[in-house]
Each structure stands twice: as structure tokens, then as C-alpha cells.
Length: 284
Image (cartoon, rainbow, N blue to C red; front, side, top):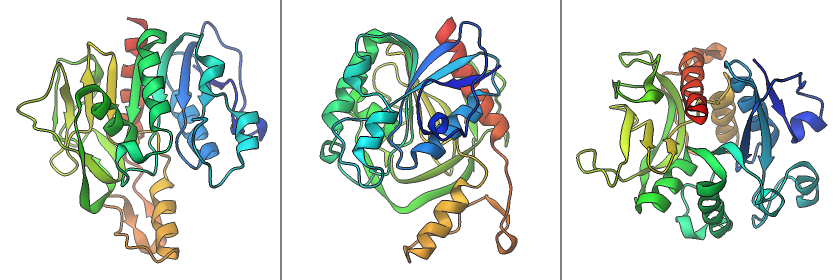
């Protein structure tokens, strides 16, 4: 099936081709990543390989002070919350953001983000939080704080346990089958044995911690990594930080051979299954 973009840089720059669709699922994507175009293409590419037609509408936080792309261009390319607040969507995706070292309430668009999450409870069937957004969602929903990691969690990590009873685990399996990119400086503070409310860990990892969590009552799914990442995303982050002389370790379990830039692109199958399972929750 196909993924279309309702708006965004990929369409304006003619880097994505829309196709005829039949009753597509409507997904709203709050894109908090600084690499707007890259993130659009990553999500479009992942959803383009699934069994349902989807249309992605891209949203930006109007209260954010942008340092890269001029605000005027963002306004012409993306929608803001006031423009969609009276609409309903099948799903909402909130991306990661490079703010995980800030306290939540110091993020300039924090009140707007909280407003969008509350709005989604009545205008969206399911919400998917990724990376920093997953930490933010867990804080909003369950008052779960986060902690700064001594070293950045950076690389491709493998699941070691999975809840087979969850619909989100269909066609997934631990023991090396679930791999997920991680790139973050913080982690939610979770007690696996005393999770609050109806929160459940669906996919867990000894190295990376919980990868996928779910609150059925809230219709919220939390993914601590980046299943959308393309093959070279971590390499670009790694070489960017090296060039800026930042402290950065080689991404774990990622390069086949760093000297020749050979990458072990090991996570697409798991990513497709995760997103397909999430899409299935939108229609049932």
C-alpha cells in the first residue's frame, strides 16, 4: 500500500511522490526533529511498506523558537495546532526531539505539547510517542521522571523479552529478532515490578531497557527508540559529533566495518512489524 504526505518539505521539494489511495488512515505527525525533511522521508518510507494506505499530515509546535529553518518557511510548509484542533485523526505520532537533557518544563513548547496530548484524547484514536516524546508522554500520563545517562545510549539494540499477549507483539519475537536504533542521553525512571496504572512493558532489552510500552486505557504507545531511522542516520549523527569534537562513542552493534563505513542494516523488518501492529490498533 502507499503513504502520502498531505503537506511538508518532501512534497514541496518534490522528494516524495503521492499516489492514488483508497480510504487511507489519517495520521497526524508532530515533527519535533530538527531535520524536518529527513524525518518526513523516514516515516513516509516506513509506512509506505505496510498493508494500509495512510496519509501523513505534518504539524509543528507554534511556540517553539526555531534555530535552523526560518519560522516563516515552517508556517508555509506545516500546520499548527490551531489549524487542526477541530479535526479528528486516526492516529497521532509525536517524534523524538534533541531536548532530552532539559527538564521537561524548560522545553519552550512544553505547555503546547501538553495541550496537544490532552486534545488527542478526544480527537485521535491512538497516539504513538517516540524517544524523547515517549519520556514526555510517560511523565504526563504517569508522572514518571527521567534521568540523565552517564553515557549516551547510541546504537542498535536487541530485545531480550517480549509480552506475547499484546497485539503490538504480533510477528515479533525476542532472541535477536527485534532490533531498534537508540540515540538518547536520558531514560525514564521505571520500576519494572511496580508499574503505575495500566502501563505495561511490551518489549524489553537488557542493554537498552524497555523499548516499547503501552497504556491500553489511554490508547498510548511509547517507543523509546527510533524505528523510523534509515540505514545511515546513526552514522551521520556519529560523524557530525566527531566533526564538532563532541564526546561520542561508536554506535554499538551498528557498523560491520567502521573503517569502510559498512553498516549492518538489521532493523527494518522489526520496524515494519512494530508500525504495522500499531496501525492495526487504529482500526480494531
